[in-house]
Length: 381
Image (tube, rainbow, N blue to C red; front, side):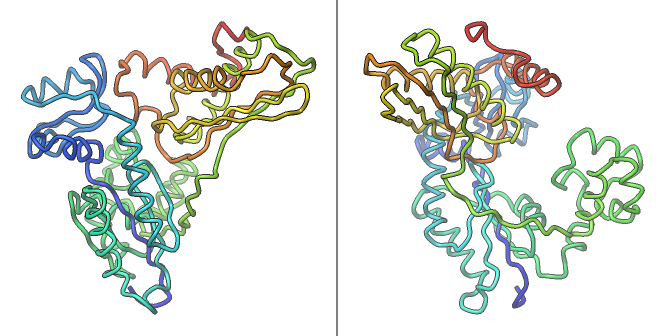
């Protein structure tokens, strides 16, 4: 990289869930492997061998098994995946000046200015090797001048690859790639663009920004910028202190267990919806109680990364059962989610059916339209 230019590295753990399963059972290596729920569930992850048959994540399990009947199917253990994710986080955090944990299996680091003291290419390669040596997990990475290019380039060199896109080559690097390779272009947008005759990012970059803005709104203007290879998005330092929380002080102190449980359910549902709206997962739940004598106690539990209400509620109620050990009136209850990472709701639904996934999507759609209190569990009424 040239001195004084941004140096951003995107690291992506290759087929992360599958790689962890192969570490636990070496007989899985080199074979079609699907991680997911039962026949009515969805594919959470699959090996590269399974992908050659057209299998991909979020695909209905029934379809995946039709395409690749010889695949081995395992339910997966999200607790193990969370553990390995934290291991990799610590390995990277020990070595880099700025770390952003973008999801359970991908990271950004900012090496800007390090060429004055270290070679960023060499440092990146050494970091990749260190991750493998200490965790056994393969990782791909790309070094570029911004997050957009580094992410796209990483996807292009997977599995177990590495590359550098020199400063000034951003637009030419993107040009020949299919529009689906561009982050923020989903299936619906890609279909609309292809109907307009736009198949490559080069063609997209030639469309006037105001035309894309008229067709796609604010996203269209951003697409115009990104198709030129422009992205000033900063690397946001990762911190486990980031949290989402809520608490309530009651008008009257109470010892009514049923009422207290109802409040825990209501609050957990409330911030669980906030979590999903921000496309985040939590790895830690904390419950707080304040008694009538103003003694305040807390208890927390590290959990597999999730944003699913039924998992969050189960943990919150377990914490309450352990925490409430006095026959004193309670004046305040609080719930907090911390150790947040980017990730969508579907990522951890190994045992859930397609019906469960659709139910969550429908509930969140109603809440989004009519407010978080539009749908609540009966026990909170």
